[in-house]
Image 1 (tube, rainbow, N blue to C red):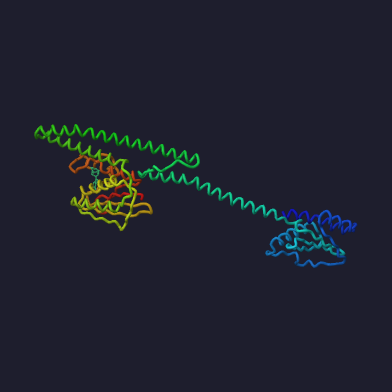
Image 2 (cartoon, protein in one colour):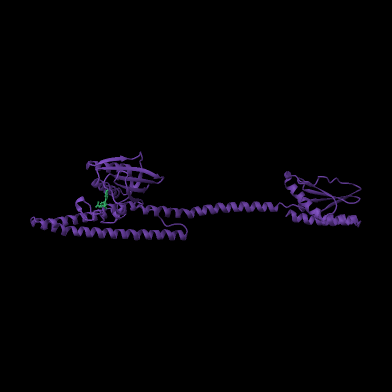
Length: 400
Ligand code: ADP
């Protein structure tokens, strides 16, 4: 802006200088410039100005320096005479002295001819207004982000089998839509789970009654090799049905509660010892409480530990922290282990490494699938590896 104004003022000064040089009616010209342009013009006949370094601008001169520099730039483009500029920023006056052939032309003008503070005030307003808008935007965004964060927390909790009754649909319409979709999905999933468990429970329960009747009838039929085989088959069927019922009992109906994992591992180790197994428990001084379904999770650990007790005579149980919000439980034994190519297969329901499906070792091939189901229900993961003690190592990671 100052540069535009300086361009105009430099043009006016150059016109004035030309009038003086052409010796026109000087008084008339001075009056005209005073009246129309606000210039105070005097002429010192025979005077000399010392140009020297007087037009140089110091970096510290601030606004005055800026005005001086801009006007000097414009004047040097239009005037062929030497000149000096004095800016009195306090008094708001600017004085330009031009050396003519026979004297010095003094032109004083108000500062407002060259400088306007409006621009800076405008910039200040823009800055203040943007700051206020930014604060409003941040507050507004926080309000909108909160329901999204709540939705994420609810989804995570539901994934771990937790309770999300407190979740409310709120926020902008898109966020509400996502929240409603989550609630619908939750209801559908719960319905599906309860249908599955009801059906399994029904089938298992209904099969038990005829099976008991069969058992009774066979018991009354005396002893023969055929009858022995039939008894064995019926026993196997009973075990399978028990397995089914166990599977069903580990369903999503149990409530999650804050449970101390170290205490639970300790209980499991004690009961394994009672069954005559050597158990080494290493809790690494970790005490973690997690949101768990205690009965289901204990069943999961029991399945793994009782497997180890079946195949080995020494069990190592350890608890480790693998992250800020994650723990790992490792159950190792010194038994025969499982071939590497079957490590994933054993998680399939009714899969047993012993292909003859020998029920003598007690299982029906549901122990590990049930364990995996329970771990997944808690948002964790489970996998098998070969143990450094020559047997099997079961790894369970769990978010806490
Ligand atoms: P089961 O009810 O028969 O024990 P699981 O699902 O628990 O069924 O285990 C599947 C198979 O994995 C078992 O038949 C067994 O052969 C094998 N297995 C499980 N745990 C171990 C272990 N600690 N050592 C060796 N084999 C194991």
